[in-house]
Length: 452
Image (tube, rainbow, N blue to C red; front, side, top):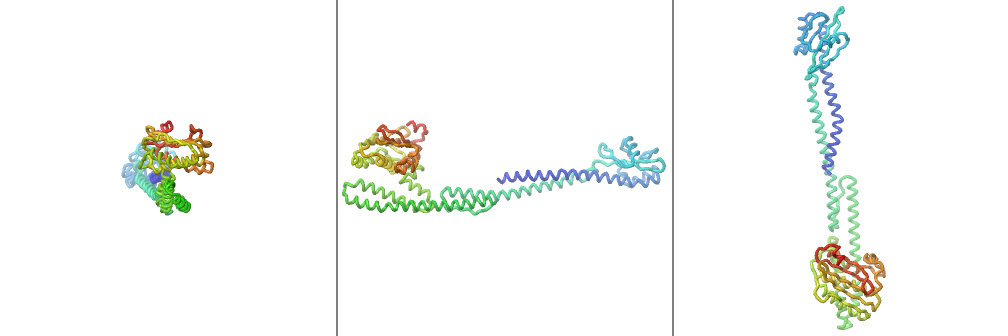
């Protein structure tokens, strides 16, 4: 911006300077020429009284020597019917023509101008005074004046560039501060604010930025408080459920373990929600550890998907037996590496199986298939229920219908996308819905994933 303003100031000032200086330079040259011709006419007029008294060559020579033009050999007197005194440069025809006139005239020659001044004498006699004005005399002082004008133009241009640069620097500083503040706010520093400075437009932008930052801070604080409050409210029914399970004896040990994991997740949410604003990003990561919020980041751990599926199916098998649901686990005999932590995969499997139990009638069969490809690992959860009427809406959180929040599918989708994989909904061979979670092991194109 500063460079652009400098170029703009140079262009504008140069055009203004040229618009004034070019005519002024021409006027200076014309004035110098007029001054030189006027000086020659004065010298010629000084010889008129001498011609009125005498036309003798010696007398005229003495009078001519007293003038500047005469001393430099640039003066001549042409007397009609007599000899020419001095060095003449004008053509005879021009001299004869000037004698017939009543006012002085100029003739342009090589190297200058000649002034011809007619003088009427007594009787029918006349004379013409010739004064030669060389080019140097015509342009005396012109180059110096032009140099001064050029210097003034250069000073004006440099001054305008300096002023434009100062104005541009002020604008650039304010814009850079605003950009730096926006970057800091985007990186998670919610305390970043900017002092309004610069032109009115940038001041208004800085004021709007501060208002936006304050609003974002308040919204995030309210969201964290809401998440913490909702999570904290879960503690009371969880505590009551834990007391009830404690009275059931050893048979309820799997339920107690599941309840313990749920309490741990609630504690994680509350702790993350209570962190300061500066830790907004880590809050998202911790929250996602429970409900998929961290799936957008990169994972540093992997797990045995077959082992996770066997463990979760063993847990859900008790409820499936109570509801008379036939079920089947396919492909989980040998270890299969999945590029996600076991806890994250467990949350996804539980969410998908929970959907099966919530949205299908008792006695509905389901199956879980583990597929291992060259670049991908797929987990396919199928059921014999009514299926999903609108798969696209089901992938949008809160739009899956049937009283569901759509959070389970959203968790699975973000887990798959965190590895570069995809989540697909299809019709299962059992007649109901089939949820396919494809996890990418290495970099592969989306086409390869969809063809897997």
